[in-house]
Length: 191
Image (cartoon, rainbow, N blue to C red; front, side):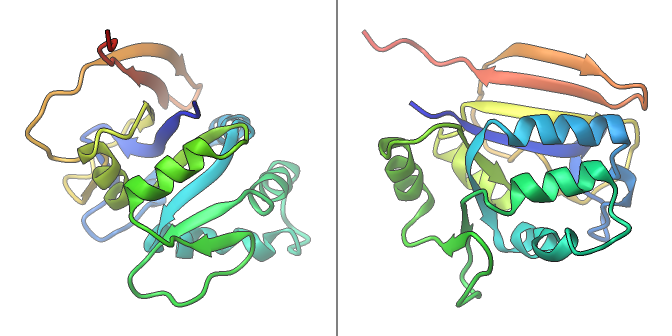
């Protein structure tokens, strides 16, 4: 069965965006950006909320920018053909290799898990991930922790009143002092 993963940059105090919605503090070094490239190679489909989808639209034409470096061109070459499912109540159309979700999040994930295909089902965006977490659908949390306190904003972890036990699968410290943590949700075996 395909894993559902949630991966984002996060401040040390737990936010993916600062109080003003800013992300400048999370601009990746080349080394961290390469880790995103490595990760996206293992993704078979990406689920996005409207805000992240609109942010990522930049990559639809980024490869036409002659000043783009090799790693950014490589990312665009991997990102653009990747199938994407966008969850939005306000969009009526999407661009590139994307489609609007036709059902709820649980139904989409169930359908994607049942389809033949390889690679993880990645979730991008804190609001969409919070819904998936509340439904118990996330299998792995992948966090790049930046050495900054932003003091508030959009939290990485949903605020649900239940405990979720995690198993550390991988850790890495980058030269920029960003720390990568990969946790698998510890699930009870069904007898």
